[in-house]
Amino acid sequence: MHAHVHCSTIHNSQDIETTQMSMTDDWIWKMWYIYTMECYSAIKRNDIMSFAATWMELENLILSEMSQKDKDKYHMISLITGI
Image 1 (cartoon, rainbow, N blue to C red):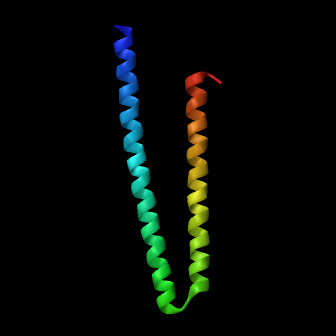
Image 2 (spheres, rainbow, N blue to C red):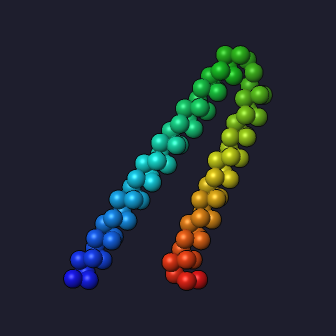
Image 3 (tube, rainbow, N blue to C red):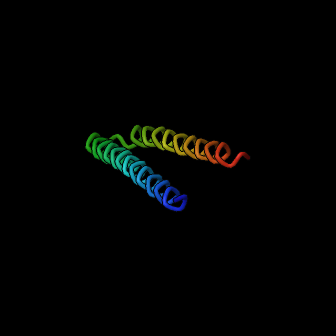
């Protein structure tokens, strides 16, 4: 009986992880679309320098979000394992 519950828990956690990955993939796709449109717009306006500054700000935002996600993952593992 316990083995069945354990397998069910693993299966459910995999579903959640898949959903989170889909949301992450969707977010990355949206960011790439924004990047592409900014690039196209900058080339069309002949304004590459302002585009580079905008992209660097976006890159910093993405890196800070990823860093926060890693921090959250560490804290969750700490709570689960009792570290």
